[in-house]
Image (cartoon, rainbow, N blue to C red; front, side, top):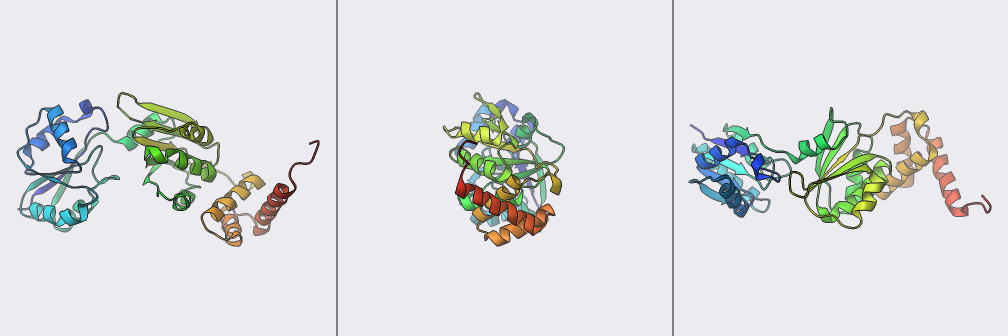
Length: 289
């Protein structure tokens, strides 16, 4: 008989949020694969759990190499518990490779549901929750980040992102550029912890706030794109969309054609808007106006 892989959700902040079943699974597991063994030790101490299973590290740096070893243990009948630093394994955390390997070998995979930064942030954001997309972490490089954002610029569903605190200001600035200054968003910091904070407002306002530096674990929730038709798009919006594509590396001719295709407008109308904006920038404001 094969074993069982248990994906265990762990508290994202307040240890009191740990589900009762988590303690039972920690005590019963024959192998515990932990993203950080020191955090695991603190968690078991806080829960008053005595573990008897073998503890191994399982993090981004050794995930690929350690997966076959854990898969072999599962195939041999072991009950393997996977825990990450916070939240559910596999969701922007180690775990996907092991789940895939277990499924391939016909091993049962189950989970201990637990706190989720994605759902918690979404629930407290004040933004629509009926339909949403989780986009994980954005690329670190600015050009790649804007390109990824541009892919979902017209997404109607609410968007949820994780971000490192030292990149938050750059990310919000890029979102302001790509999504528009007035798009509503919420920055959720240190959820369920002592200094929990939720900042809500237009992206431009949040970007200005983050420019001074923000600390802690960050989840960003962004309102989906508004429903628009060709008649709702003014010249400034057309120019902005072309500019975003140019910033991502497209040539102007290609960017104009792409914006025309996505808006249903004639290419000539988009081209004229870009030329008019360029001329206006060159001449500047008329004196006395």
